[in-house]
Length: 136
Image (tube, rainbow, N blue to C red):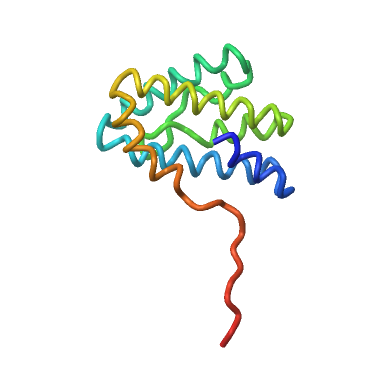
C-alpha cells in the first residue's frame, strides 16, 4: 500500500491523486468484504481501524463518523482529511490505517482468508495514466 501511494507521489501527481487512489482502494476493500461481513461489519471494522490508527496520526479522527449513501464507510472523509496534510504524513497515516485494518481483519477471519479476499484489490494495476493507441 505504502509503495503504491509513494509511486504516485514520485510521479509528481500530488496529494489529490493519492487521495483518489486511497478512496479507490478502500472501495475495493469494501466490495470484497461486504458480501462476507456485511455493510455494518465493514463500517465497524473501518471505524475501529481509524480509531486505533489515530493514536499515531491524530488527524485521522476527522475521517470518522459518516457513512456514504450506499451504507459503506465515508471514504471521502478520509480523502478530505488527508488532502489537508503534508504528502508524506498523509501517505504514512493511510498506510498505518490499512495495516491496522488488515490486522483487525486477520484477527477476525484469519490470515489466509484475509489474503484471498484482499489480494485482488492489491493486484489492481497502477493508477498511472496509460497510453492510448492513437492508430486509426
